[in-house]
Amino acid sequence: MTHEQLLAVMQHTPLPERMGNFERTRSPQQTEETGSGLVFVEYSHLSEDVQFQAVLRGEQALLQVVQNGAATPVRELTIEEVGHVLRADLLMMLEDLEDEL
Figure 1 (cartoon, rainbow, N blue to C red):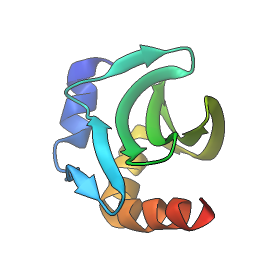
Figure 2: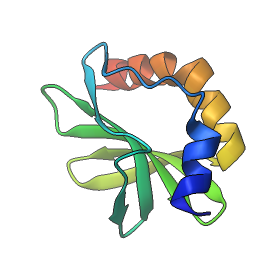
Figure 3: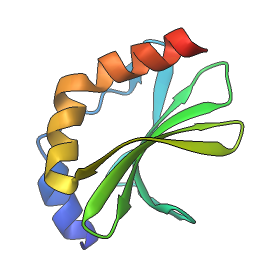
Figure 4: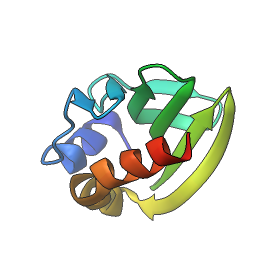
């Protein structure tokens, strides 16, 4: 999937700057290539070394939590599904992650 296709799929997914104790540090407009794929959504905890990421790997998207440098997969979806899940469940996923800290 190209960056333009990713932007088209994610164009109707609102990504607030902050949600609870998390701040958005990456968006589809500002992607970053990593060893696990292309990070296109990232929220970092304000006081802990924890990030919630959506990573593009081919035609699939992986939701993962990175804590102290170790990535833990949460869910694998199609790129179309990840936009829906982020629209509907992002706040709940971040609140669940906060509860685990």
